[in-house]
Amino acid sequence: MAKDEVMETGGGGDFAAKDYTDPPPAPLIDAAELASWSLYRAVIAEFIATLLFLYITVATVSLVRALLYMIAQCLGAMCGVGLVKAFQSAYFVRYGGGANTLAAGYSKGTGLAAEIIGTFVLVYTVFSATDPKRSARDSHVPVLAPLPIGFAVFMVHLATIPITGTGINPARSLGAAVIYNKDKAWDDQWIFWVGPMIGAAIAAFYHQYILRAGAIKALGSFRSNA
Image (cartoon, rainbow, N blue to C red):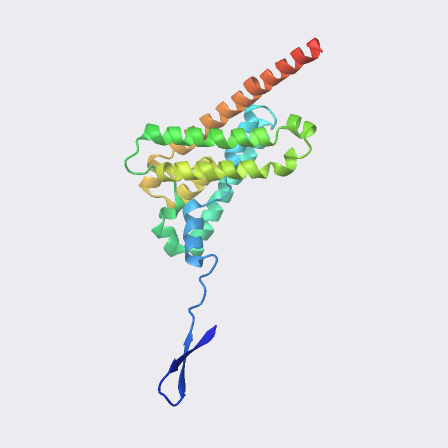
């Protein structure tokens, strides 16, 4: 928006107007930053393979169906990263294809622990937020479920991006590694499979056989004493 700056130039009352233009406002979302962030995170098929393993663990999805889903998700991740490489090749090279790698200064054990803990937090939150028992008891639970899940994803990313780039999903990690296809993308690829699988299994066991079993036992005791 143009504004006039008025300056007095003499005693005769003559004024000279000096026009200037304000710089344009900064954009709400910077396109270059968004592109680099999107590529770096490579959120293709995010978390789905891990969650499927979770549901296999508690026998809510058949093994054959889950394997077909996993294959489709890995192929989808490869296709997604391939499209990024085709249309954003400069960013693809700059950010290492979005491939998960272990950051310098961290041991493999630390990276594995980060993936296990991060995956545990995510899938335990998903399980708790979408528990059909809670949904039946509290009608608002299905509506609010995305909120705690989103917070869990956010916190896990804050904690693990500096260590592993945040995998917590084998399909996402595999897709980026296959398309990038450099040694550094494959050196620690096992971390991004073993970690999420262990984390998902622990979360499933803890929720299904400790928390839920304890709740059922407590409910039975309450009813018997009523």
